[in-house]
Image (cartoon, rainbow, N blue to C red):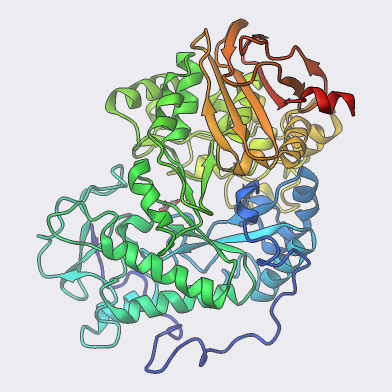
Length: 594
Ligand code: BGC
């Protein structure tokens, strides 16, 4: 693609240019930082290890001013709902000014909010109100690239001798870094795009309207640090670092996970530890586990607190179709141990396609066969569908998938709307089909907005079993047996068992491959988790080495199950797609007498 001169003319002042002597002390820091009623980082430095996160797109959640686009005021109004649901933190994807060529991941101003969502004051109010409800706030930091509408890029292309000349990666010929893969293979055929204004090619790992920043340039690194400081000053609790494997390039490599990329992340961690202690960094690095684990850094040089675990997610979906625990077991076997204080971020779905980059060709074909039989259901290397339709609307499958997500090692990230089993619209472009308005009730605007549905940023799911008339929060809340109430109950249980967040994982031998069993364990709690991956009921014998005589109690009801036999086994029977979370305790004879 060629970017023509009239695309995205420069606008306004250029924010955050680093100047000589510009450092944390010379920046303007707001007088009042948001006063949180939450425990301080010192009181609860590891909150992210037991937290359940909820990804919420501002424009999709609730439209308070009825203009058809969700906003901060709307999100603030719905915080009570999120507190009721029982989540601990929200992750808000980019809400900065953006031409919206990539759902906001194409940023044109790092230190502002898009007026469609409200004002900086609205954002501060959201923060305050969230904190009052003990909900932490994590925001997205997209530092690999900007939009081509960003004033930095406009200055860079128009003035090759000016201060922004080297803010991006420019070359006369597109001859370097040819070993780097193309990520958005549906739309891009090269990582280089010719710019007619500058008469040179610029480098981009994603869309050709998203030029990569040049991290070789110290001014870029400083500008990014200042951006992080700007948002940390508002009191946010953490940053999801978008697309971090691609910050640096080096010929002869695949330009991913380069040592200098790690150096820079470690530098950021140092900065937040010193200036904003307790602020959490979450790595989005869609890489195999041995590469991802490097983004935790080491004890002496830490990088991120949390890294998303990409490979485990497709294994959960595959397990439900193959009806065997083999793939999940293999994924855990390939997962390196976590360094101190580190945590995995786990998820079933998010705002992107269900990525299949971390599976073999054979596994990918199988996943397409099961979950994306129509080409329109696919996007790039993945599947653009929501959880409920993927799992053919099966309540049992959706519950089992959540039971695994919530009991596997890691902090789970839920995706807005999945708690009520919202559907998707595969006819919308790119990944928009999984980003449609939240369905609050069955009124014409689905309770998302009182505006005219024709003005909505994306259409509501129109008809069929997933339309707002059938699937909405209000209906789910009023029905005690709904998916929403079920999930809320599960989150309550999970809160009582911090071991799910911080405990170790021991996979157990079972007599039936379709039964996945494991222990989650720390000094205080032991929970036995058993999942039947099959569409038929199963009875299996589970080996529990060293646990002869232990008692088992259902974590939800408290009901006692048969003790572990002296031969260190139990027999367990599960209905199709059934599961148990059983607390295991050992009472010796002295305890009994007391
Ligand atoms: C985000 C995507 C986005 C891409 C480029 C990511 O990994 O999750 O939504 O398209 O980065 O910014």
